Length: 196
Ligand SMILES: C[S@@+](CC[C@H](N)C(=O)[O-])C[C@H]1O[C@@H](n2cnc3c(N)ncnc32)[C@H](O)[C@@H]1O
Image 1 (cartoon, rainbow, N blue to C red):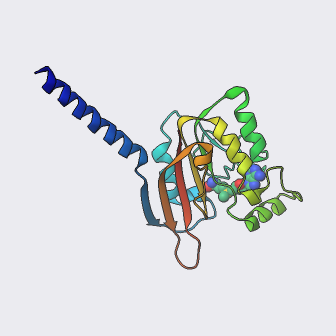
Image 2 (cartoon, rainbow, N blue to C red):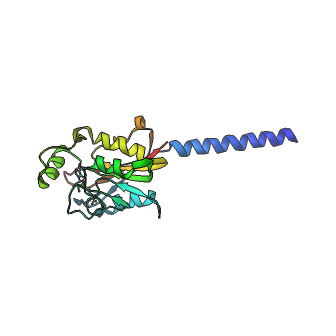
Image 3 (cartoon, rainbow, N blue to C red):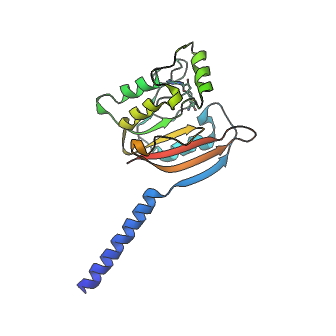
C-alpha cells in the first residue's frame, strides 16, 4: 500500500515538473496585421500585448515613452512628450532604480534605426548622441534595465529585430509577436522576455 502511494506521488511529481518545465520553455509565436502608426501604442495589438503582461497596480518603467505609453513611470527626451521625465534614457533608468528600487516590468521602444535616432535628435536640436551609443541597440539602457527589474518581471521590446535583453543578461524569451503593416513596410517585431 505504502509502495503504491509512493509510486503515485512520484508519478504526480514527475508530471508536475514536466508541466512546469514545458511552461517555462514554451515559446508563444504569433502574427497579426494592423495599420501602421508612428506611435507604437496607437496600434491596438501592440498595446494589447503590453496590457496582457502588465497587471493592474504593477509598476512598469518606460524610458522611451513617447506619447501613448501604458507604463506608470515614463520618460522621453522630447520635452513636449507628456511623460513624467525628460532625460536621456540611460540617466532615467539609473535614476528610477536608485537605491536598488525595482519594477515589475519595462517597455523598450526606442527609435528602430540609426536614421530614426538621427531624426529624433535633429528635431530636438541635439547634435551629439548620448553616452549610450544607439548603434549598439542602446545596450547600456538594457544593462541598466536588467538591474531595475525584479526576478520574474518582464521586458517587452519593440523594433525591427528580436534581439531584446537576451540570455546573457539573464532573460528567457517567452513570446514573439510579428505585426505586419502591409506594403513595403517593416513588420514591428515584439519580444517578451522574463527575468530568471
Ligand atoms: C518609437 S518612439 C516611442 C513611441 C511610444 N511607445 C508611443 O507609442 O507613444 C521612441 C521615442 O524615444 C524618444 N527618444 C529617442 N532617443 C531617446 C533617448 N536617448 N532617451 C530618451 N528618449 C529618447 C523619442 O523622442 C521618441 O518619442
